[in-house]
Image (cartoon, rainbow, N blue to C red; front, side, top):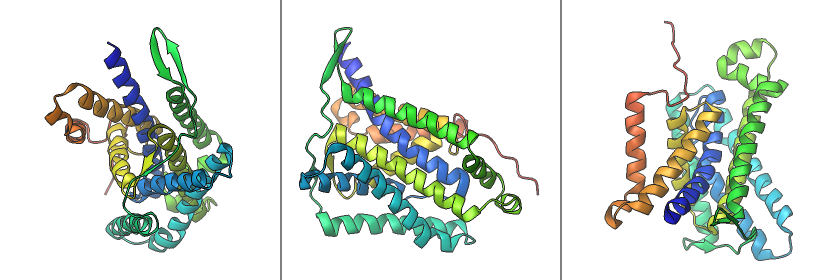
Amino acid sequence: MQMLISTIIDGLNLGSVYALVALGYSMVYGIAKMLNFAHGDVIMVGIYSIFVCLNANILPVPVTILICVAVCGLLGFTVEKLAYKPLRQASPLSVLITAIGVSYLLQNLALLIFKSDRKFLQSFLDLGKISIAGTELPVISLVIWGTTLVVMIALDIFIKKTSMGRAMLAVSEDKGAAQLMGVNVNATISLTFVIGSALAGIAAILYAAKYQNVDPYTGSVFGIKAFAAAVFGGIGSIPGAMIGGFSLGLIEALTIGFLPGSLSAASDGFAFAILIIMLILKPSGLLGKKKIEKV
């Protein structure tokens, strides 16, 4: 029983990070109608920014956290302006190839600067443990879950209740009509990238606090899994991204924890196999909406 509880806690921790990254994927796809496969690498950049700040050993933890979110947000804004904005009218395939190229660019820049060896971070959010019903629960796990839920609720309120959020909804429905109604489409898409990348920065903080390591390929692995989580829950849906992230994290943790050694090594394969089955049964995902196009 103790092992099951511990495994579920690990799965929820992992799923929370997946969910935050999946939120970024869902936002960008839902509004800009593009798959930003460089999104996962923004996490990697964020974790390296934490690594640099911790090594400098002159900045307090709150400042390090703000720097991470700011770096990720600025990176998202820069990538959108330089790589994606010129392709606004290009074919989806061109944008997809560009996204993959940006991903490799960020990975190789990290290789040049930090080399290929895994870097280990000192614990900068060591909050200890608490006992609940005889189970030792790391406080950082509660922080991770709470942060993820707060971000999801805040993002949902922002999208539905603010003028900028409603502009995002308008652009997601019909860019042309939104522009005719006075919405600045380019500014809206840029803001979407900044918010999505800031979410990746928050995921980077939570990942660094819990797992305390990074290498140039950390983001690509997380990006692919978070994309799978977004599709599983229904890409374009904020609650769907959360459900997909938590589901994928739990599946991965339970596979590693309870299957024999040779099978547990294929935990990623089990997760993606379930995704494939899900897409066969419900292609739009758990909470995705079917769109009927009239021709």
